[in-house]
Length: 317
Length: 317
Image (cartoon, chains in turn green, purple):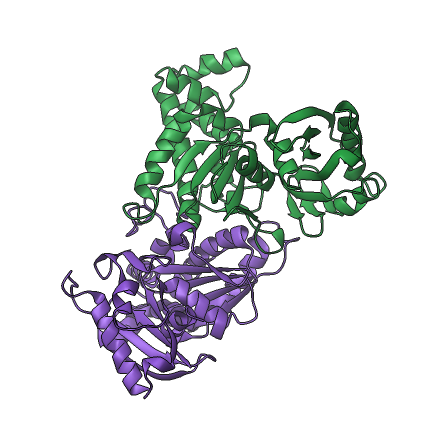
């Protein structure tokens, strides 16, 4: 028997056939349609991907234990409904019900960051831990929480939005997509890092970040990290500040959950120990009751680009 | 059968005999000793209080189902040990083991804010709810979380410290006792309110807060609220700012837990609707996915001064 994991994103819908050890047998993707309507639901595109991966892996739906779907936005995982998603404009889409017309196997849907947290716990860097705080540093900041081996979603699956935790109430704090100001996401996302990088570059015209960005064609989440590693002071300033933002939110979550481990995923997590070492130090020293409370390990998430597919597949395990 | 609840505080150790409906039959207290030593453990004073309440209620230990203890600080509730407490200087005190020498009934100990949350859930304003975020606004800011009817303490009972969530990383944010800067506690505690009140009073020598404080003998948590109700603009400024701080932290927690209800306890909660109404509005409008996610009610906690005893008693239910 196999699992099918579907990873819905703003650009594409990825899908894969996964075995029970988290090995992907076959994967593929199709572009996300510009705008879904009542006549053409996102479920139709998800069905297409499922058909494609079944064919690609040379299996039939009878070989499948279940289908899991990871989807950005607020998901009612109990009823199998997308409450809403803002990057792909969707409201109240009963995806699970719609897909059950085509597939007579268990189908689950959940928030993409929740899926990634679960995926890491089952197949990745979180194996062996019972309590995990997972954070993905990408376009936004997504969080997922595993408590006592189970995904914690908040009442009616409407919680676990740690990225929308205000960490800076000062007047000139950046606005967040959620409507508040000074959310963790507005400081610790890759987009925020790019904003912070540009601001420092403007102040330091001699920084090697200018040449680096020119060569790369743009300022990216790598600019500051790459130049800091080469000794550029302005870049180091950016990195230090950015890590302080990440750490502030993570310690807030440690003080609430006291997990076995913090797992950091998303594009920025490619910086690995360069990122996790200073965060580990800060968690060790600054968390509440640091001297007395149990150790919390800071690690890089391991599933990388396949986190979405594997995490979604883990929903039906 | 009855329950015994013990409420350990910096000034006194309170105790009460409680029935299964949360009615206190008899209660009393003794002062907290200045400094406990290895030769004279806090358990000895707790024993004294237990003996006093048994005598006062005219029952014996055979009539008691169990003893619950609420204690400030970091508590290992599984092993029954006070890891540490800073207002009463204690480190690694095995209270439950020590008390079992005297009393052969179930004995539980937990953090005082956790107890208060549980007490409200079982006997107070949280009755009928499964998921609660409880916050006590007193000398500090304590939080307690009920998830699916059960107390959530974090791994190894070392979490649930929502008061130590940084909500303002700006440079001039006030320091917190925990070692960080800008924690929720440093903005939303009664002590913080007093500091905020004094700062505004200094800027507004004509505010009626000056006369009010003179009459009361000091600036207190009531000063700004009382004068704002009488139309004093400077006082209203204090209250508005303070409520914004409370709200910021609460919405952070709503975005993580999505509880049925937020319960506000502690001295400041005496302001009732004056406090809860604007907080309710803000939660309704500013939480993540406000338009789509389930309603979260904001209420005043109801157990007041007995919250400590009743919450501790609820531990052994």
